[in-house]
Length: 158
Image (tube, rainbow, N blue to C red; front, top):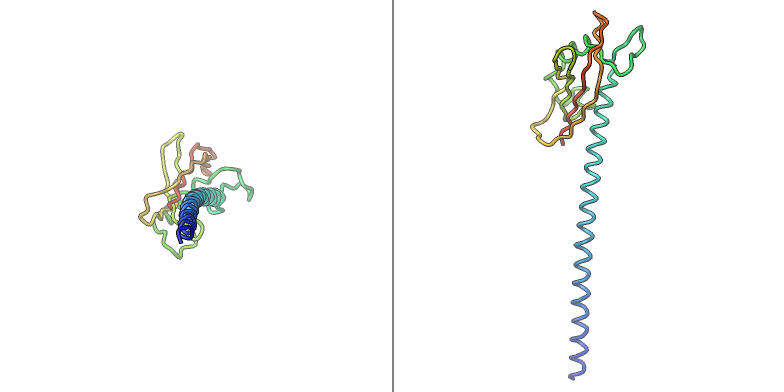
């Protein structure tokens, strides 16, 4: 009888040690998996930021053209002023630009020779966490033929 009790006690001790090791393994695995999920979410947010930045910088409504040829990384100042005046604060879901830019704030800023800024898209949905990117741009004034220095600021909210 004593021998059977000792064997049963050994078996229970081995099972307890096994389950403790299994528990530590599961804790480590979930921690590792949670870190990789967080990292992949950050990558998705960065890809979304790059996507929105690319879309706004290549938007035909803003591109500078001369004789139907694009001027490179340049934005037409007259088109920008008209677009910002018409679309600046009226962005709601269902708007065609909402499907492209989602929840973001897009501004063009002229640095030289004047300090102007235009809000092209503003739909933040009261979110506070965002990623931002700045892209240097030239702004072309078609009436005078001059080019101004500026940058594009894109904030994508998560």
